[in-house]
View 1 (tube, rainbow, N blue to C red):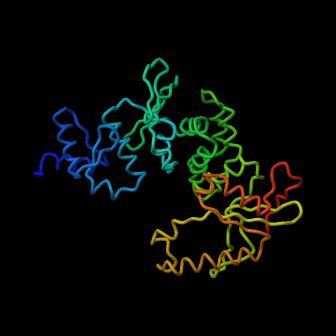
View 2 (tube, helix red, strand yellow):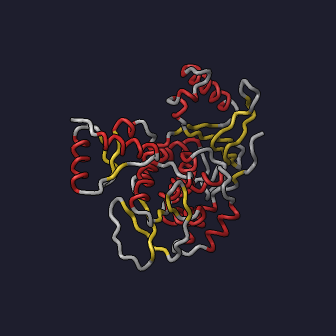
View 3 (cartoon, rainbow, N blue to C red):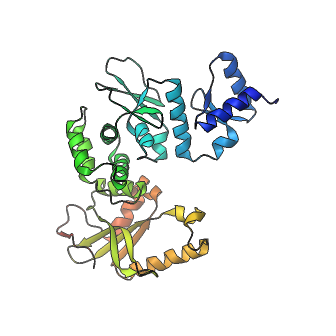
Length: 327
């Protein structure tokens, strides 16, 4: 297909501004569709396009942000909320939350939602500009996420904001009690278990699943009596001390450390694997039982529940669970 210098210029300008391109006429739309059919462009959403090679090298979260920034350029009065705003605020990296787009609208608007675009009606039109996009304020965004999403999907967003120290738990309690909206009790329930101590969204999601499945909430990121080669204590993701003196550890497999070369020990995958095995052996020698699980097991629940039950993790109805940290 012949080179189109005007199209190339548009694509270069869009990429420099972290945007997609979009059609403004039927003629242009057909031209973009021909380029898409030839494999030169990839379609983003309904009417946006990007250069295939450029798009493929972008992380998933940046693809989503490109799409949202482009929609904001096409529709400058749109205000995005909930999980979409959370991504723009930098407190959500869940791919599941990037399959849909959430925007907020005045209560008197009459616009239907569809399987991709979800419209939410709010009396307040308060918003902020984040990365050239109009989004709900941070507190409002977190409140809406906590009441719109399931507990396991909402907790990682709250944990992320607390972990980054861009808002405090006290501030969130005040906001959640003062903002207008239904399902306030559901939102406050998510705050009850938030601390900012989980290390990533996967841990926060798994924690919420454990709580929903009736297990006693664990202590998070507990330092163990064993130390690594640098003299630093090994830390575990989830820890329980039972009333009868048993100590139980659960670890979420962080498989990224085996895929991301920047996280390799001494730049070596074999060294990384050996170091992790040595760490696990040190921990197992200090506790009664230890289980490892993947995010998929937490998402599907059944396997995680089976492993926690096998390890003897107490339920909330069990008698006396110690709050003592291992020393």
